Length: 219
Image (cartoon, rainbow, N blue to C red; front, side, top):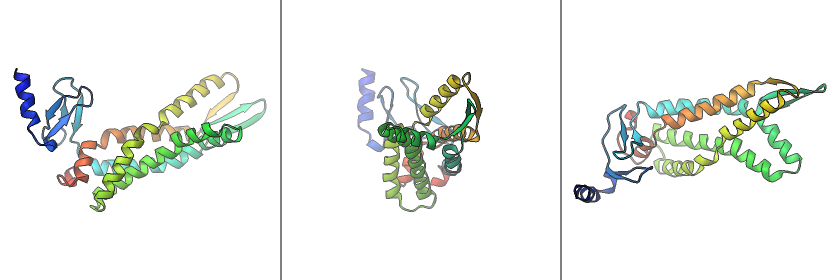
């Protein structure tokens, strides 16, 4: 009976004061957080959202770093292979071109989109959203771009491509002379920066800033 009474009180609240857990769907009153605090689900303990320090500035720095790493990560050699006196250097882009030239155009397109196209588009969307908040311009466009970004999130698969590279290295290391290139370092760095960006760029604070909530200087 107490649960029923509590749920009735919650259901009477306006929507902007409610939050639902993404894991167990529990509907709760949205807590007001101070800087550095996190909100957790009362039932399953899932982190609902956090209020982090300097989200916009830190996220902008990470986006710019990721964009600077993008070109060397995709166009510098990931590894150099020496087999029977023949040497070849492999990059992410050369892998896409190689698949296309061998008649696997469909796979080449998928690899290009998941390893190069969509990751770049995600970074550009994040940059546009953060700049719209930082400069306080085009918030309505920022909302649209951020929605597009959320639809793209699951399609950028740098970690899957990296696993494929690591498997290839393990299989080839006993068959040929193999040396790792600077491109692999840049690729791993790009992946780590993007993971950190996902952690730092709090969706709750970004939505709040885009919708004209609290001052984005505190976001």
